[in-house]
Length: 114
Figure 1 (cartoon, rainbow, N blue to C red):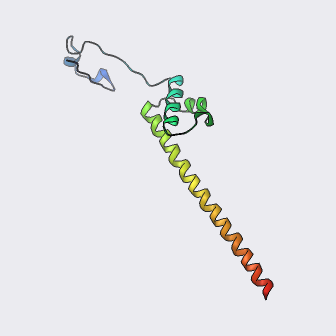
Figure 2: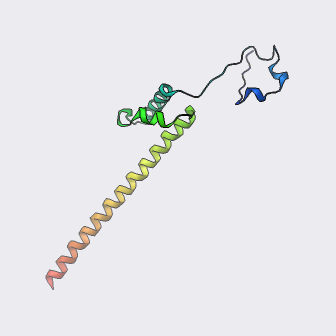
């Protein structure tokens, strides 16, 4: 039988849980370092069809010191959502510019016919 547990702060656990025989081993897993963060960012960018070469991965990794792998994943997801919103806004702006250009063209035609 294998039983696993996790805690953010092992020192806060009651002594009876840490007694010999309760847990055979206690492992410490730290937050990812810079190289691990770069790998995690690349994995999640690729998972979402993004080319990691289009991003400054070392800069993103340095800026994300203290982030867990799950937090890095959510940052990549949010970045994709933000980029989609920006693309939609750009498309709407382009449509608006086309509309204004057509309106001005129609207006100048009407003025010439008068």
